[in-house]
Amino acid sequence: MKIEKIGEVNFGKFKTEFKITPKIKKYIEEENISLASLLPDGWKWYEMFLFDEVDKDRDGKPDKKLGKNFVVIYNKITETLGWNQEKGLETSGFEEKVDIKKLITHSSTKLTSIKNPKKEFMIGYALIRK
Image (cartoon, rainbow, N blue to C red; front, top):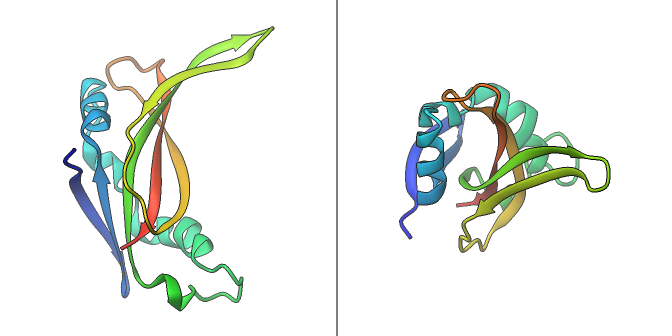
């Protein structure tokens, strides 16, 4: 499986590559969503997400052992099928397995289909040390 780089977001000395697996890319493109929309605003993403994840001892500084170079790999889709009184929230989706050795965390972000604006789903990703 060829994981494709879709961009990079930098903040000071910190650098994060964003990549996507083939099935996830195909799904996103079929929903008419630009891959560029998967690249977050640099300072917001670093300040509100990444720095919180890499400051394990909560001293206000990213832990040196985690470094300054990271990779985000989009590899999971979760769709909401609706609410069922018996089963609760029903979902479907798929995940492409990727070899992750230096995982920091998993997370996801909500997207809305351009093709069908009533369709919302989550795109999951792994944040790893480079």
